Length: 423
Picture 1 (cartoon, rainbow, N blue to C red):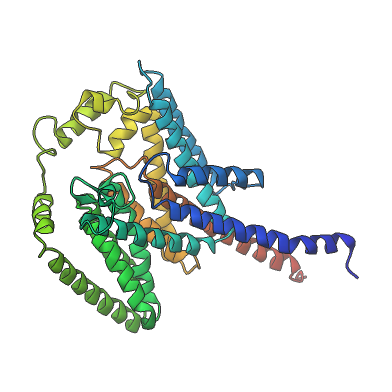
Picture 2: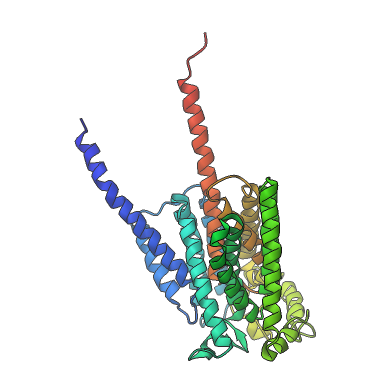
């Protein structure tokens, strides 16, 4: 006979399941909104603030595995807040730090909800793909003036989709593209056409962003994905499939690129953007000169100089995330940020090839994060929404792995305790 307590608990299960489904759907919608940041505050910020607040009210759990991420981001933000104290005119600096704090919070939020239910990873990436395809189409159609208000989706004759900057639009498309590439290489061939079309749409959108950092990121991540899959999969037939599909996809990309370059508007801008060093890179107070001067200056400014102050002293912003960490978040923020990146990369590397349900998502996020850390040498990423999503995915997958190992240890202890004692 069931007890009243057991009956009561069983009665709550459908409600809990419904709440979990609703929560996952809201997370999916939130990730989808991250592809539409044409003005700030964007719908993403407004929606995620409400969602995170509700989740905290209903018991968002931060485990010991996710706690280091939270601690490092708190230290990072502490450095940012301290940098405000050296500014003579705060202006919009507090709002800048508020956005930084919100994005840090989203990273912890994603890690926690992924640890709670790893099935959310597929929903997150599916939503990312949908956002990537739609914002790419907006960028492509806007670039060629094929839709009303086309100018809203371009900047400096470069596609930017539903973003403010082509240099954010391009990198945003890399992770969903890699996810589709993985699915293309691992799923049945019958499902390939739709995935291939979506990959081509995002590849064209990324190409028309004319972001050299995005081009380099895409090439590096695609090659790294194939390499990691070849290392993980040991069967000759599967490796042959990967190589054949990869070569076919590369050939298709080259053909598509060749067709695009037949358009004079595209060819002219491509020729200009493929120069390794642009006018604003070299020369006095160019990008690289500013980096050198900025790093030397930061050695004398332990609290930094405050957000957005660098561009008032030099022709442009830092365009280097390491320098940005020093100037806007001080030495404390810089050390916290470097520690966070090293910790995240090393943790992901340890778990990269383990046979787990969440392994493909960890692999993709890890590869793309390394690429973002590399392009951070020439661009600021501290306000990129998808960058903090990548952090959350890797830490969430790491927390899942720790929980899995702890459950195995507990099971082993139970078996040992239940075994008959030998006399």
